Length: 318
Image (tube, rainbow, N blue to C red; front, side, top):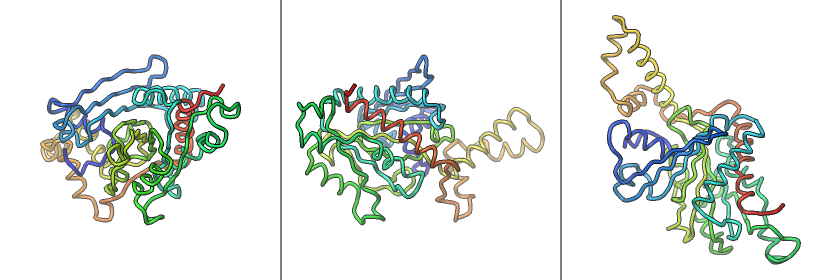
C-alpha cells in the first residue's frame, strides 16, 4: 500500500487492493440494515500476511456507513445508536458486567478533534457510586461500572496519551478500555458518515501523519475497543477525486482536447495519481486537511450518538 494515502479506515485500505488483486489473509463481509439503510462491513485481518498487506493489525474492523450521520434527525440517530451498540456487543459481549474505562482521545479545543472528549462529557459515570454503595445497593441498581477521562494531547500535557492511560489502567483495573477518537478518511463520501469500531486498539494521529504510540491490548494488558469517526480529509485527496471525476466525464465525451489530457493522466492508477497531486500542490498545502464548516455542530451530534450507545450497553437501568 502507498504509505502517502492517508486514512484510518481499514475498509478504505481494503478497497485500494480489491480493485486490482485478491486479498489473502483478509475476510470481508457486508450487510445492510433493512429499515435503517446502514451498511455494516466487517473486515477481518486473519494473519500476518493480511496485516502486512492491509497495513493494519490482526483483528476485526467494523465499519458502519451511515448516510445521514451528520444530520440532526433524532429518530434516525436512535437507530444508529442501536446499531453501534449491537456491533460493540459482538466484539465484547456482556459489557454490563465488566468494569469499563472510556478514554476520549483528542484536543477538545479543536472542533474536528473534539469527538473523544465530547463523548466522555455525555457518559453516565458510575465507578465512584459503585465504590461507595456497592453493586447490590438500591442506588446502583442497573448500573454498570464506568469510569472515563479525556487525557488531552501531548502538546497540552507533555505526556504521551498511552502513558496516561497506562497509569489509569494500573490504578483502576478495568476489564475493558474503550478509546474514542476522531479519524481521517480517504473518501469524501465517508467524511462524517462512517463509524469504525475495532478490537485492535488505535494509534492516535496516524491518519494525519502524526502517529503516536499505539493504544492496544498488548500495551494496556486488557482488551481495547477503539471507536472513531472520520472528521477530516487530506486536501490532496479532494484534488485527486476531482481529477478522477473529470477523467470519467472526458472518457464519456471524447474530443481532441480531452483525448490529449486523457492520454497524459489515464495511465496512472489511483495511488499514483494521488501521489502526483501531492507533488503538484504547493508546499504549504502538502499537509493541509479539510473539514466541513459546521464541524462543531456535526461533532456535537455524533458525540451524543456514540455516548448513548455506550450508555445503553454499559447500564441496564429502566
